Image 1 (cartoon, rainbow, N blue to C red):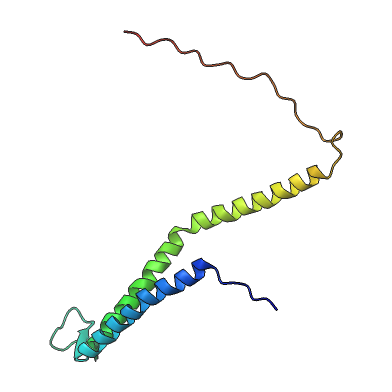
Image 2: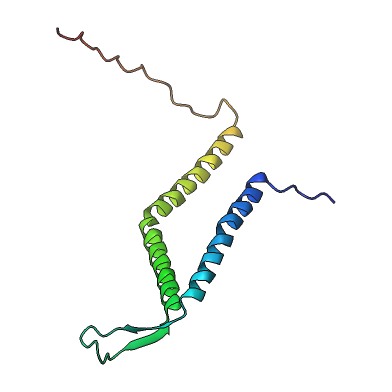
Amino acid sequence: MTREPRSAGSLLRKIVAAVILVPLAIVIVAFAVANRQIVTVSLDPFSSEHPATSLNLPLFVLVIGLLIVGVLIGGAASWLRHGNLRRATRRFERDIRELRSEIASLRHTPSGSASVPEAGSPPERLQLRPPVQ
């Protein structure tokens, strides 16, 4: 039984993720502990004294919730924006599969029966005049 050695890229990726995620988690926990006070979020733009709809929640819940919503909106916008690139990639991959199968079929045909177009005469060279002084 032989175990496949881990690639250096995978190990490096895990180390970088740990170096970034551990301090980030510490900062988030410290933020949550420091901002436990309750805040009122009013969703009524017309009455600030007696809002029709309001929420009472800890400040850290509000901030972290808004960050999560922002990340989701940004991810959705990025996904929608790159739709044409994904479509082109699928088309190119399909073309590659077709061309590979065509190459494979041409390799298996006898060399005399394959029809190769003859090369025509090369195009004329571009004639450039010397610069006028």
